[in-house]
Amino acid sequence: MESALPLRHSFADSKIKEYRLTVEPTTVNLTGNGYPDTAVWSFARTVPGPELRMRQGDPVRVVVSNTLGEDTTVHWHGIRLPNAMDGVPGLTQPPIRPGESFTYDFRPPDAGTFWYHPHADTLQQLGRGLAGALIIEEREPVAVDRDILWFIEDWRLDDEGRIAPGFGNRMEAGMSGRIGNTVTINGRVPRTLAVKAGERVRLRLATRRSPGSSGFGLRGTSRSSSPMTASPAIRIHPKVVGWCSGRRCVPT
Ligand SMILES: [Cu+2]
Image (cartoon, rainbow, N blue to C red; front, side):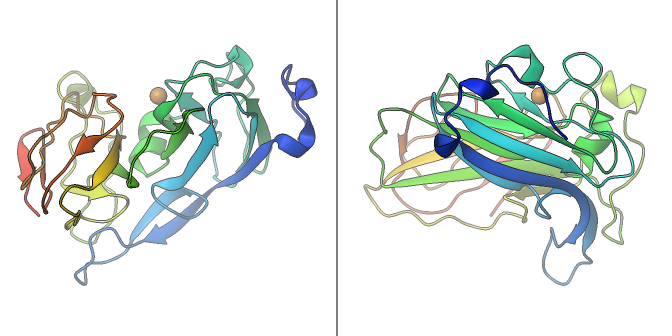
């Protein structure tokens, strides 16, 4: 499907970084340890969706194809973009109908860690797994030894590993949001992250959790940092990481 995009014609095609994202149901194992697999809705058959990396100011194209049984779109959360690329169905673009595609073309103006998600039937599509990280690298690279993304997600699963229905519950929406019973980092229940003493690690944190507040902690470290802090890097000494969320703590 061709889209009418004002920016597109100013791009030199050879320089455009292109991604293709198919929105489709798939099955993943979130919890490990012999627990059942979970049917999710995914970008490109992974949860979270693929990490999209691009350079500040460079042109990027993302072609989104919808194989769900309902409309969708993609919104680029926190990024300053032309309105036509903002992904709000019925307002900035027509919805992407089942079987159709839409092409997003833009130049991200700001560096940082962002995320993308649908803006149609949002609570259900988010709750079933449609989200991914969008990393905009600085034009002047930050000096780090490792650049690590933790994409934190929150799932409400039943005993069979199925995503529990009941999205958009008004009582929950008016309180803390839909709080799950399973937390994953990069699509798995978190374990540990080993870092070397003195290693300079850039730890990027993104979350699609709906509850209004989260806590985060690093164990065995000399410093900790809020997920909202945009500092370019933190120095972690030894060893193991754990984190808390809402009313629960998940030791690792
Ligand atoms: Cu958003």
